[in-house]
Image 1: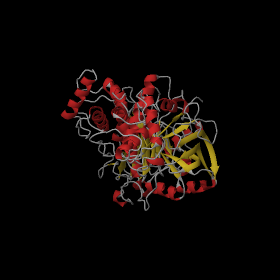
Image 2 (image 1 turned 45 degrees about the vertical axis):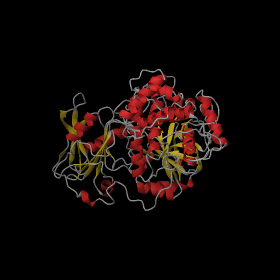
Image 3 (image 1 turned 90 degrees about the horizontal axis):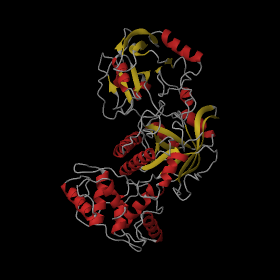
Image 4 (image 1 turned 30 degrees about the vertical axis):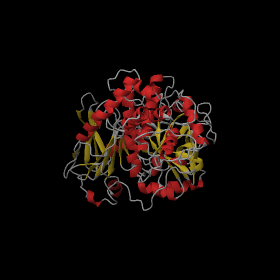
Length: 604
C-alpha cells in the first residue's frame, strides 16, 4: 500500500457493525422486535431535512422514540456486544459500547458520517455528561438546537432525562439530517425519567485526577501501539504482559471515527501511573486533495485559520484529560497526493499554524502522516524558514522495522533529538494477557528535550529593539534567537541564553538557507528573517492575533522603530507597514500580502 497516494491510507478492515449479512440482519431484526424497554423499530411516515434522505423508520429505546432514514442499520449492543461502535457508517447503536466490541475496531479508522449512539442515562451515561452536552428540558424529548459552549464540530451529545437516555450524534457532510433526526424525537408511554443531578464526579464528564500527570509522551525508547478506541483499564493491565509501554489515543477531532467510552482524565492518570506513555492524537481536517468529508481549504489564509482552530480544540481536549502543557499533541494528517503542489501548500500552511497555536498555548507540536506524503513535504520545508516546523514527527512506513529511520523521505539530521515515532505495521490483532485488540504497531524514540517549558522554549520573543548579538553574547535576546532557530530546525541545543559555538553554527545554517551573508552573528537582517518566519496570511488594519505579533516583531527588527507588540493591527502598525513597503519599493497600501511577507522573510 502506497501511503503517499492513498487518501484513506489508514481505512482498512471494515468490521465496525456485525460483519456478516446474517449478523447484520439479526442485529436489525433484534432492534425491530425487542420490547420497548430494549429497542424497537418499525416503518413510519417520512420526514426529511431539505435535500436529505427521508426519515421513514421509527426507532425506540427506553421510551425515547425518533425517526431515522430507512437505510440505517439498527444495532442492539446488548444482543451484539462484540460490535465496534464506529461513526464512519450510517448506523444507529442502542446501548453501551463494550470493551470487547471497541477492541475489534480497526485501528486506523478515520472519518465521520451521520450516525447515532443512544445509551441509558445510568451512572455510566451520567458520567459522560459535561458542559458541552445539550440538556432536554423536563418532560421533553428534544434539547435546544443551540450549541453549548465547548461542543465539538461534527458531534452532538444530548441528555434526555425524561426518557433516561444519552444520545450521541455525529455528522459528516449532512448535519441537517442529524438535527432533523434529533428534532423528530418524542417520548413514548414507556419512557421513565431519571434525575440527571445524580451524576457522580465534578460534572466535567471525567472523574477527578488526584495526582498530576507528567508531560506526555515523556522520555521513552521502545514499542508502542495505537488502537481506534482507548482500551479499558483492565485491558491495559492485561497488556502489561506485552512488549509495549506506549499507547496512541485519539483525544479530539472531527474525523475521529470510534466511540471512546473509556477515555477520561482518570483513565489517563491511571495509565501514566502504571508506567504507560501517552501519545495524544487529534484527527481533524484532512488534506484538500483527499476524499475525506472534512478537509483543509485550498485557500491558504483559511487553511491557517483552520490550523489554529484545530489546535485550540486539541488543547482544550488535552486540558480536560489532564495532559499538561509541554506535552506533544499529534495532528493526524492522513496520506495525500504529494505531487499536488496546491494540496501540499495548504497542508503545510495548516500544520504550521497548528504548531504556532500549540506553542502559544504551551504545548509541543507533533505531526503524524505517511512517510511519502506529509513527512516528505515537512522535510522539504525543514530549513527553508517559510513554515514553523513541528517539534516531533510520527511517520507511517509499514516495513516492520523497530527503528526511526525515515530515509529517503526524511534525512537523519532532521528531528534527530529523540523527536520521532515510526508506525511500522498496522491493522493487526494482537493478544496479550488473554485480551485481543486491533492495533497499529509503533516504535518510539522520544524525549521532551529543551521544549518542556510552557511557551515551548521558555523564551520571550517580545522586545522594544532587536540589537545585534554574536558569539560571547548572553541574555534574553540570545534565548529568543535560540528559540527561533530551534523552531526553524537549525538548532537542537539548550535554550540557555549563552551564544556559544552551537548557536553560531545554527545562525550560519539559517543565514545560508535564507541567502544572507553567512557571518554567524544575528544582525538586523537575520533578526527580521527569523522573526518573520512562518505562514504568510494576508493582514490589514483590523486584523489581530499571533500573526500580527509576528509581523510587529519583524517590523521592529527591520526598521528599528517603536511599535507595541500587542497583536492588534491598528494605526501604528499600519504606519509601520506602509513605511516598510515604501522602503522596499513595494506598493505602500498597508496590506501585508505575499510580497511584503517575502521581503520580511528574506531579511530585507
